[in-house]
Length: 296
Image 1: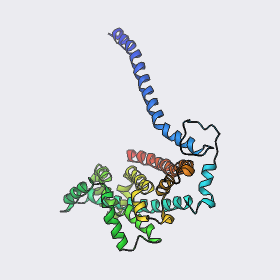
Image 2 (image 1 turned 90 degrees about the vertical axis):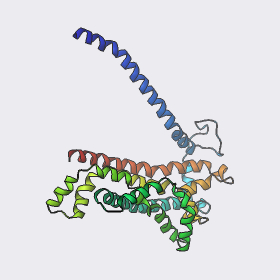
Image 3 (image 1 turned 90 degrees about the horizontal axis):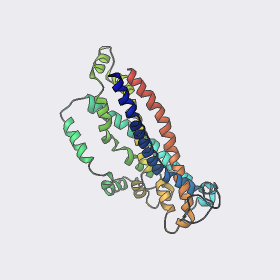
């Protein structure tokens, strides 16, 4: 019987090796397809050329950092002030991330741990509203902000922060589902030990929910960082308050494409850096929190 098992194992090895090789080959092809656009935009940003259309992948005239330095050249700031757009986006994204994450955490905890009459109704309404894209209310939101005087001057910053964070609490479902998996016996044990409701929330629920909170931080930051529609509508013609997405879009205007296309590629690379840095930092906390949750 052991001989038959050995023969089966030996006969199955070539098939297993071929299957693994095929899987790795498929993953390599998919990785190449996924990385090709990224490599192309990086190479384009380093081209020592002019124009907006290139047939070759590798630059024929060598590589240069000129396209990056021109973004920060004071002579170009009167037309497109990329440093200011970058700082505008960073400022708005940080505050919207903090406010939005706080809203989501509180709403998710209440929906998961509290029971009241309108709870089910509110969850159903939230699910129905979630079926409609947010930009459907764009015009209404704009006129509300305009009536409040938030579409002029520095108030535009506040308007954008409100747009990105005010309704963030409606995205509680994912975090709420995670909190539902936390045994309520932990709440009861903490209460018996003399913890207040705030201490149960801050010292029991939040530490266990760190993996999903990290995910929520990333999503809350990416929303305003990548958004174009609301930023363009609210900022309007006030280029002083443009975000990077609006600024990059302006570089591809018909009158500017030929002169700014390579700068657009350089700006696209720079815009991705904060996202990559934040993801790497949050990934470390995510792994730590996951190991802590397993130990608990």
